[in-house]
Image (tube, rainbow, N blue to C red; front, side, top):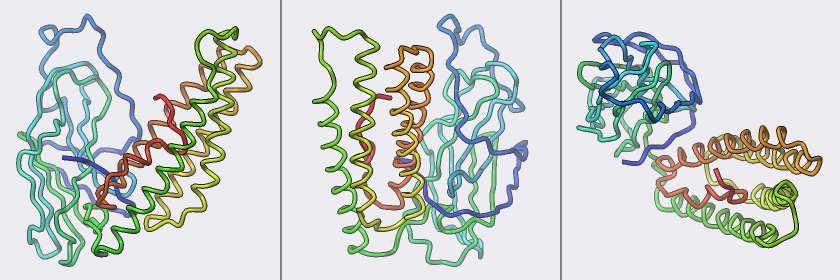
Length: 301
């Protein structure tokens, strides 16, 4: 099942049952991997009190969030879980049994979270809201009410014309970005040059920034079919990524290895952020947005 995101803000109320506490959102938490020497045999099992399950709003859509609040590594398997969406009258409008995307699978690092966006509703949610989402994963039950149509991932109801407009945007944007990536590849120094590794980094960063700038200029001219606010956020991350590429070129040209490495790590984080936002468009657009992940230029991450 593919997961993605939609755009709508909202103030909602979180009701938690069966030992699920009210939790604060913490966006973009990073999960640290256990060391290679860590084995499941040496880890304690996560107790019910060690894990908290909640439904939280992230980037305008409800997410199922699992947190390790034990303060130490523990081991637990939480695989199949159930999800239901009800309308204001209490009627169930969508239901998923045995969702296979694991909330917790094996080693769960301390003080981190794992979040999964609600799947797209198979209906247009024509019945009136607000809506209620309920997730059940033994022994946990979490419930969140007062949700909007977008927050429970209702699909568009704009017919074939809307789908064609979105597909056209993806196709045109993808073509722009593939061309920019090809330009970058052609401008990147290949093996066998007399350049030092840092000089190669400087040349690559400069070429990547230039290709990104040109692609961004063309992407801004494309008419946005829907989700202008979301596309604007994605473009903003692309612009920040491009700015970091410029600064990387300056640092490498000046021989500042530490600054170049710091900026390179930031660029990678921005690339992941951009790709994540693009992926979240899929259920709302009812189309694959994979072609946009190469925008404004394909970069390693």
